[in-house]
Amino acid sequence: MIIDLLSDICLLLGGFFTLTGAIGLLRLPSFYTRLHAASVTESLAAPLLIIGIMLDTGFTLDSAKLVLIILIMVVANPTITHALCRAAAHGGNTPEMEITSSDKNQSQTEAELSGKESK
Amino acid sequence: MIENLHLIIDVCLLAFLVLIAFTAMKVTNLFVATMLFGIFSFVAALLFLDLDAVDVAFTEAAVGAGFSTVLMLAALRLTGAVENAKHRHSALGLFIVILTGAALIYGTADFPNMGDANAPVHLHVAPEFIQLTQEKIDIPNVVTAVLASFRGYDTFGETVVIFSAGVAVLLLLGMGHVEPKQEPEQNTVLWIVVKPFIALILIFGLYVQFHGDFGAGGGFQAGVIFASGIILYSLVFGEGYARKVIPSEILPRLAALGVLIYGVTGLASLLSDKPFLDYNALSSNPVAGQHMGIILVEAGVGLAVFSTVLLIFYSFSGVNHNE
Amino acid sequence: MIAAAIIALLITLALTLIRAFLGPNIYDQILAVNSFGTKTVLLIVVGGHALGWFSYVDIALMYTLVNFVGTLAVMRFFEQYNPQGEQS
Image (cartoon, rainbow over all chains, first blue to last red; front, side, top):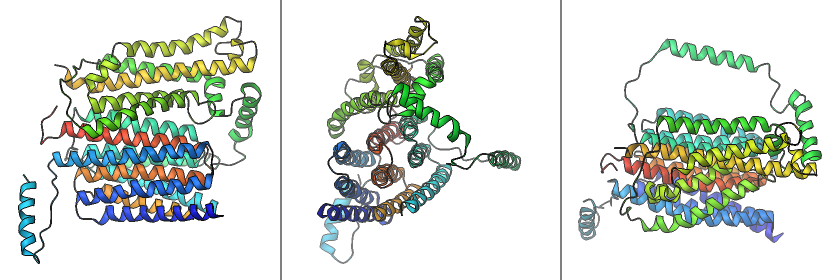
């Protein structure tokens, strides 16, 4: 009974975070922010969903393999994120910072930093 | 509820197929188009899973999404990466395509409905295979039994076809010669993460090979997965080092060895006065003979597929380095 | 509850596909395709358990590995081709 409830909660949360990540992937302004949003789904939503399914299956060979899938996903997907980020930075797609006009002091520092980064 | 879920998933996945095909058509950067073909294979494999065709889904994912994508990318490295801008619009071409498509669709109107219980294949062939597998071969995976034993001659033909594809690529391209670079470019995270992954992929390939009797799997999928491990090594550490691990000279010999294992298993039953590829002759107990025959034959297929896949990858990736 | 998760995953797949179509540069599209692969693995696991697909765990395992290899292949080949940098 408790395990069913836990499984339901995990599946619900996992589905919610997947949707959040996808909406972030669609709506966020630049590539690096979208990268951040997509990695949320891979690191948080995927283990939650799979743990939800594992609680439903019980303690069998299938759930041992599902643990393996979680481990692989948690290691492989951040590596892809890192490699993609590095490839994009080398390819000339540098991160931009927005300079807000409300805070002059802060905007000067940000202008210097973004000036250094866009080289 | 479950019926509705089946329907919803089927409709959504079919819609995705159309969307992905449309996107692949519209995108002009060919790298992205290749990756879209890869996820087309993913979604097609999902559909196969929904239709309960597990081995087909496995093979589609391994070959379509894995190896085919890598090959097309290796070929793209030699050609331009952006589609040509000029398009000719041909009304005659459109008319011919529509006519052919309409003829094909009209031809399928005579087929029985999908999953119809009264279709001839469900009334005659399938129950016989299921029953005979239980009596004579006694393994849970009926697909492997049909592939390796009941239709073993067809599978032998397929293995020879794969081998001749490798021979054709060798004749056309040759494998070239790639020196290991003195210092491959430093990417610490990738190196550290990929090394255990390669071991995992290779072990998984062996698992799929020998587990083909009991779950999804078999020689074809295992060969492709095993080759994917070596391809991963070649992608991350450089092709020169991959060619030191698995030298290009042994690959054609391994492919021939795979086909030879298959053929010799068939010949061994000829020596006992039984037909070609009749595994009952391989042991005193016919069921044990079938088991042994299936293991040997799948090993031959796995070896042949692995060597040919790796050979084709070496040929494609070695072209640019020919001076 | 599993049905809700499956519907959420299907909507996510559609949204990711839109990003793969729209993305202004290629890195967006590579990211979207990799994300699509991960969501497909999740759909196999959740849908396989709910609908009783046979041997779905092996296929999910293999998709994870194939997705990894495929995305690395795209990045490696694109880097080597990149007209801005040197062609190796």
